[in-house]
Length: 548
Image (cartoon, rainbow, N blue to C red):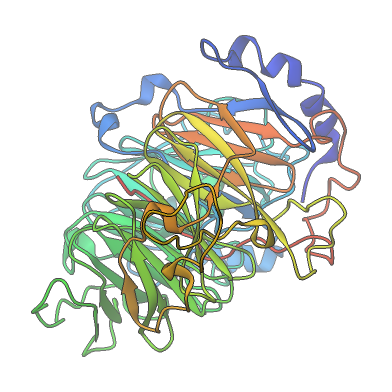
């Protein structure tokens, strides 16, 4: 996957990366310490300032990690010949997740082997969205594989080479009719269309990221258009997620509380024949009467759905909204399993643990909530942020010291970022949580006598949305690390095998190398990271969102 010939230059440049072109903001350090060692700022990614549109302030930057795998030349030629606006090109998508947690975390040593195309790499699409592939001009420098960051700023999508020291992106795609607000990538898409982009207007495009990078022209190549001009739903897209094991199906949530299911093998033209929603406060599912996209509409809640996330096996989908509720559904059976309310205000982000046992949420109450699927309720609150929590993610590549990750008492590492510009890292060990106890009226607060709090009496019934528990009923977590990483409010974070990526609302990305990776080269930089017995698989199916 990687070109190890460039890795030495990249790894030896950490000192230079923290100065000059990548100078930190006032009062910001280029490292932070954890019990396992020091995380170092390797370098940064951003957008060209000259390309910013006046609408920049209207969107929040989200980042998708995209791994383009090597394909046989025959498959590439077939993919190219099949492109076109109305050619019925199939689409599929999946996102890292994470929050930042949904695409697979990727090996991070060495360059991608390509270089910036000669001439303009700016692409603008109008309301029709795409051009025919007959006029594609190939970029001879693109070798067909690599690891990339896809991120939105203002009216543009930018694509950067993750493994290059270049701060500016390789490619920009500008939208003249609306701003892109969410996106997601599927590394295993069978038909070439692996990137989905949702717009503020409600429109959704699917494209081949490989084709965009191969093309040096000024047109978006071979886009498939869904919900064209808001024909089915004209409210803002808030999140897009690939359905794990869904054979090309994906879901798109909107600001009016609805989520739509699409299938790549069906017509992309909209079918607006869904029945009127009689009660905006009640969950309901309607299926399309004709064999067209979207194939189903889920009405989740009244008000925006701010984020959605699938469990790794695709069995469950978690949604969070402006109404402050987490809702967890059995996706196949279209059934509400559990959920509950935030302590205060809207929820803005969510993420699953690798094993599907826990869900993280964050929002306007400045708390990180840990939900248990087994108990169907909140089992811990993380206190440490000073403002809204905007991104949460489990670190699927961290392993506790002296642990094989399969014992009875597994320690989970997760991270959170917020509008307080801080990155917080947390360790969750359920056996170490102190369960609050119920004290009789007038009892001494210093004595841990009495029975457990009523919040812990039993698991909540299936299908029940719980009110927020009182603050004294839930164990508190303190962060392992609290580090101010940007000067602007943060929007998301991503974990890879070698690094942690933090993203601010303004479109600046920082790559923090894990202890041991900042100063040494990976032993096998050419192979895509395996998920062996000591490596937990990355969380699948988390879509990129615009949750503010």
